Image (cartoon, rainbow, N blue to C red; front, side, top):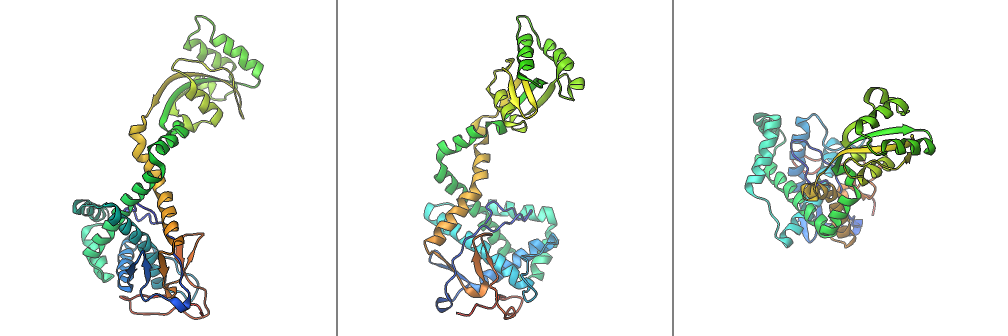
Length: 343
């Protein structure tokens, strides 16, 4: 399950763990999650909304598995995979007092209308026998799952953990403007360093020497001035040396796979932790939520009706059960499942 899945973009990656019951202990509903049930009707409605959104972007809702599978069954498996994660998020939110507002839900659905056209969305919903209320329910669940995933990530990492990630990836948040001179040997680099740090030496002297002796092929045009870039765009040894410098400081010779560098830091702009804290939390939420779901599955809180398939831990989704029987069929408004395995 991928938290913060925007309806308008449909970047939906199931990251949900489920546990199959045996044939002898099949649950009556599509799944039970944390003591609550996901009904066949909920799967059908959610699948209808997904068919609407995917269809508007000319994409399939799920991928059929084999010649005897059906698009309807594939979409139902996808919908059930998503519903499991969404239900876990709802349960967590209830316990922790988390919620989303009607205004947030309206904004999410309005974005879909703006992106695809409100009339077109309405027509596609009707075609798939679902309502705008069904769409709004799924939007609310998306937003709530995202809020829960962030809360779980923050609880797992804490402020110290977030700051540690910031420190470990400081090059992603620091723009450096550097000049450099690249030579082949340490001895040459040492000679360059002595010249550019001699009393009275200026940046103009540095650039002039770079144009004369640097083996960087671009030095003839830019005199070794590399401009402003995030430090992380450079190879690690170069980036670490640049980050360690103060403005207008020149590094001792630094070796990389390209040769030996002498680096002059012209300017440095560091984005404060507070300004990127939310972005860091955003990058951590998917993994944190997937780990949370796996934990709930390992605790036996998730059971899936085998008629919908089985869980594949490699892709974290409900997949079709291998069988020699053809897929069972049903009306478009009801669940369409694969045949259960022999118990």
